[in-house]
Image 1: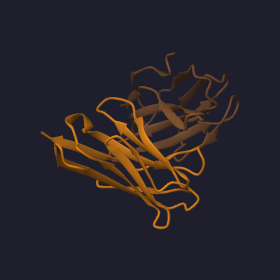
Image 2 (image 1 turned 90 degrees about the vertical axis):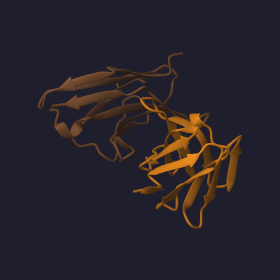
Image 3 (image 1 turned 135 degrees about the vertical axis):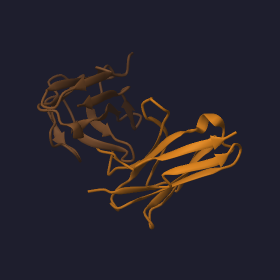
Image 4 (image 1 turned 180 degrees about the vertical axis):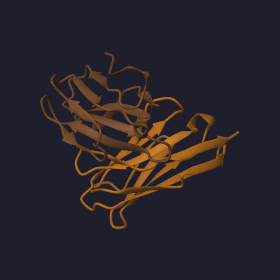
Length: 111
Length: 112
């Protein structure tokens, strides 16, 4: 089955700086890669996703890049703000049926 | 439109007791999922369903059973709870038209 590795497990950045979280996947047939944000005590919520026919996708301050050859994808958050502090999860799936999640990155924005 | 709801929100069990967690969605989604979330281990899929009357095993199915008798409900059962099942359980449903899994608020289960 699919295996998704996520790094780093914790990340602290100064407010206004950029944050990058990286994930690798094992199944070359995976074609859907979402990112979820989970605030403390809350449910995970989708923030951005990308499909394997696209190399990069942006939505305001967040972007995701995908390198199919190397089987890795990354989340980029620019101009970080205190409300960006949360745990972020990457995931991968072949089609849409089942997601395999990474182990999460706890992002802390330092004011 | 309540989205995905879970019952109960919290529960404490003794080893060997049984219980059922209820997930309900009012969005007419075909796919539903049960995950467990443990510190440092992300979200792991327990069981899932691709439609009413169907269920399938996920990554960590042992010790759990599920049923999907109605399209809007997905039940997760623990027949004989063990301390290793202490976790936060999330239900989710899939919206194919927008390519997104919607999660419920979670159930925090402690097994003593």
